[in-house]
Image (tube, rainbow, N blue to C red; front, side, top):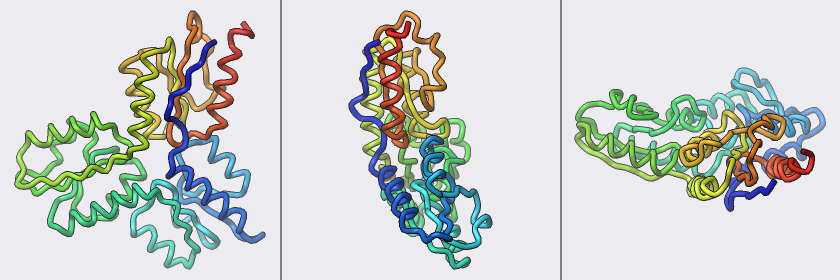
Length: 283
């Protein structure tokens, strides 16, 4: 089978930094010191499992850590969580993506300027939860169904979850703009790396018989890639790795496209492509 790979895919700088920071922290850790990650360091089970074998313990709550070193994952955390870690006397290593930190800083500044902060994104996503924890008066809206949450005649300061698509951001701004507000300030907080991956994926999926988007099922940017590709090529499949592939979807297909989310390691992509290229030969 002929396989084409998207021009931009796989690890983004923020994720690459988080993985590098985790590896360096584990290498420096003393024999008896435990290194924790407050939540999965990135949204990719295979990579999290690899780091777990190297000694990284993933926990979901500050209460689960009594001593040692705690890594702040790429998605960041709310300031209160950082304070709780400090109160426990834990050594903190911050691997938060710089763009996520920027959203937190912008939200804080908007509130200081008297705006009611509006975040366009997924309410339960850790990045969004971290931003929510930076301000007091905040509304999260995922889509048009959430517009009723907006305060009438409010002074709105709008930011966006970094991995949302420009199309969704623009559509939501248009919907908000048709509502009732007293003032409006919009800051573009979209990640350019995520946009590059979206554009490359869309361009590729139009040229292939079947499209594969590789990455964690909980990864927001990977899900976004799959959603966008499926709009242009119904034969799009979001998989974590080769083991999840239903070989039946390859029937009658000669050209396959492959892209990967920003938290998907290269070795996952390479293994998938190698297996896919040899599929026809194995019959």
